[in-house]
Length: 227
Image (cartoon, rainbow, N blue to C red):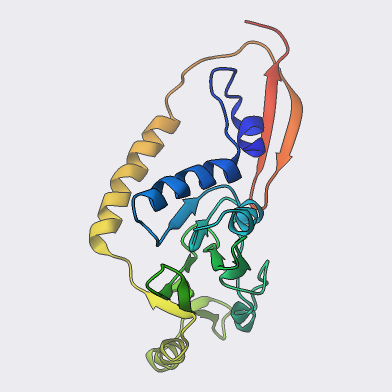
């Protein structure tokens, strides 16, 4: 909530409600309708959703985002450095029932995957996670004797792909031609929009605030003078 207010300048007409209290309100509504398996999809970040899991009864699973955390020490085998050791994170709600919080890194680098079993009261009794790092099948490159970058030969590539197939935490995938064609259309539209001049400013901008994120820097600027 705090980050959204600071980054979006929403003005006085948009009100932001407390995440914990809002989650509790709607969980109670669902439970009042006889629903006892509740999954929250929230973009409030890992820490805030851990707090929701610990403070709100009735939640079983929270899929979080925004913090872009890689979770799970199993990814250390690939040379990656997870933010937290567990995928998913397990906490207990106030009534003592388990709540699981998961985040699948960022930008489709990872596919979050879990299988959960519930008892008749809607409590998770077993959860099996198998998150997978996603890679393409056409990126295997090496330097040849002349120092040029070339693809691995078929034998070497098949050996690597077979090794990947035997590892539950990584998957080599091919591009989907239908989705690639659809994406190409929007990429062209985006490029066209980038070339549209909306306004021309005669005065300089003055930087007043810089907000740091894990994967980008957003600079908030303010005009020195009204045009």
